[in-house]
Image (cartoon, rainbow, N blue to C red):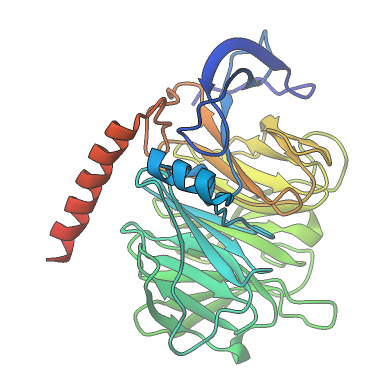
Length: 388
């Protein structure tokens, strides 16, 4: 694996004369010159570009000419279903799931199908405080509901399937990771000041049985202090844990319950942690960690050495600017998605090797209404065929 250069300063904004369709929808007619954000800054080789920002349903839905005319004649404004405090993200083939505990919702943004929705109500347990989320290989969604004290499972379309676990098993659950085959789900229990239940729980998805508990409160190996987000490496069966109160990442071999490695310490320098929250790994086993105090996410190689970082802290909304960033995830093509609760957004970054139109979250540029209707008809036909 190629080692990247460590970034010594915040990335520079490159301005390029690119004309694109702007506004909240993909078919607005106003045009302007935009800035292209590249990370790291020149002369270092580009590794990532800022791709897009999601704030509401308008960012994925297509407004037809008839709808625009209707709004004009009635004097109405375009409907926008937004987020209040996006916490965690999961993604499956262009469909983005965002947990929002403040709204008691899971938002679903489908970039390829131009569609926004939310998960349907559970039949046996009200969704009250959804925190950590993840998807299996077929797109089933798993949600840890800290308020209800259970794990809710939905299909890819947001249809509620069932729940496992119960409130007696958890203290303050926040993070969730599921195996790709959908057989095991892991929960990080953050605990609190008055409990030693700062640990990881493993469940059998089919039976709902608690298989084992890993760790307790402490500073030693396989001990945790306020564990937050977790990520699962299915290939090696390793679990990555943001041990936030100990300002480190611990990597656990789930085959034998031993510590593989740990890295990180408290500090204000690059490579240190202050308020680490979200975590994920890419196909090269590089580790991405979101830190709310720094307003960025840092990227480490598999040995825990810093490669680069993206983002800066700020109270003015903009690409790569964060005040309360939390969960992040990496999609099938290597795009990085990160949530910010303060700015009520999800930012998407793409690897430099990937064109902005490639992949499941690739942008569909300058889409005409005729092209949209053709694509929508194809999507609807595929859905109808699947249901038969």
